[in-house]
Amino acid sequence: MKFDILTVFPEYFDVLKQSLVGKAIEGGVFDVRVTNIRDFTLDKHKKTDDAPYGGGAGMLMTPEPIARAIEAVDKNHEAWRVYMSPRGARLNQQRVESLANEQRILILCGDYEGVDQRVLDLYFDEELSIGDYVLTGGELPALVTINAVARYIDGVLGSNASTEEESFANGLLEYPQYTRPEVFKGVSVPRVLLDGNHKDIEAWRLEKSLEITMKNRPDLLAEADVCEFLPKKKKKRKK
Ligand code: 21W
Image (cartoon, rainbow, N blue to C red; front, top):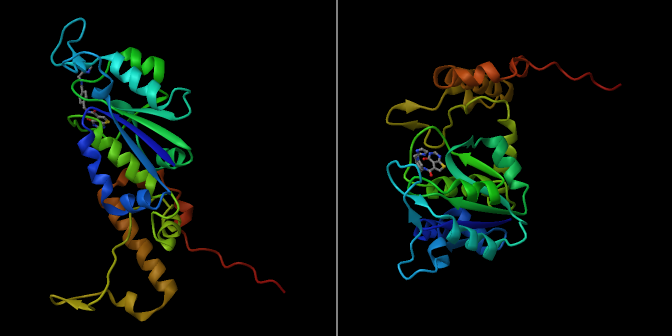
């Protein structure tokens, strides 16, 4: 999997040298190339922004340096091209999964008040937002997107972490988890988890998941397939 990032703030991406994503990059399973749009300006002031036609506050990124940067890193449009934007479709796990199936992804990070619309119309495949709150630019959203996609790449997570996720494809929030010590500051680990009865543990976890989902994300319950939560029928034994 190969990412190209176009930005006027490349330092944001230094953080990729750390963490599990950084390990994957070292391991060669994952490659992120950061391109400074400013390197593709032609004037001596290296100007990347200008005032909007029609008036209004703030500045926009001008199209020429962005276009030259795109032509330099992805001339034949081999990458899936994403513009991070507060008006984009909201990133969710389903979109992350489909991005993980791409060979190459190019991400443009907008800054200031955004980019000239013609850049989007001429060069980009989709616009993505990471949620309904306002940031100063697309760099953190790009890092969020890379991090979420990286979890799907072999060698980023431990071997059982990804299979664990499948058991949580039931659309509910996660149940509470405990590790040693058995008693911490006078608070014990729930009895059921210590007794080793797997049926009871499964039922307890489902109950807690439902409780937490009801409290924090009732919208997810409305979407969830309730049949999934009913006690499972025993499989008929073969004679
Ligand atoms: C914030 C850019 C606000 C532009 C008329 C039209 C990328 C982001 C961003 C930013 C504006 C994402 C205007 C969640 C985010 C991002 C910077 C508004 C004014 N007036 N996901 N446009 N939140 N944000 N421009 O902020 O670039 S993905």
